[in-house]
Every structure is written in C-alpha cells, then in structure tokens.
Image (cartoon, rainbow, N blue to C red; front, top):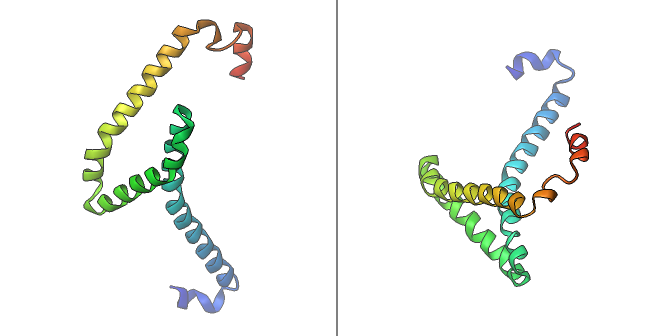
Length: 120
C-alpha cells in the first residue's frame, strides 16, 4: 500500500514519523505503567513504618518479576493467582472506608455547608 501511495503522497514521511512516534510512546507507556503502579502500591508500606523504605524496591522487583514470569501462561493463570489478592485488597479498602467515617463522623466531609462546594 505504501508503494502505491508513496509516489503521490508528500506527507508520507511525516505520517510515517508520527506513526513511529505514537507506537514508541505506546510501548514506552506499556512498559513503565506496571512498574510505577506496583512501586506506588508497595510504597504504602512506608506509611506503616519508615523502616520499610529499604524494602520497597526489592519487593517491587519480586512482584514485577513474578507477574512477568507467569504472564506467558496466559491471563487465566495470572487471574487465578492475582484475582483473590485483588479481592482481599478491595475488601480491606472498603472496610477501612466504612470504618473511618464511623470513628470521626463530623470529619468525613467537613462542614455540611462545604459539601456542596466539593461537588461543583
């Protein structure tokens, strides 16, 4: 198709460069996003205790390598092992989200008069 269009298309080099740039940005994002997601999740351990800071990078590497090691078996295997972990994670987040306003009911949204300003 390029050979057929190339003699008549002046913008073909620019379109080709744009396609290469878009593809490289896509692949770069696909590589860096999982690493950043895992790293930011593991960094939450430092909220428990500051001494966990030295273990953040090694734990992140172990999790990333484990996920990438089993991903070639297919999404079914990844989901089988990672799904229950995510279920527990979301249940804990939900439980903590329900417990916090019960402990400090007046501080859940601040003053009721400011509640309308938050949703504008």
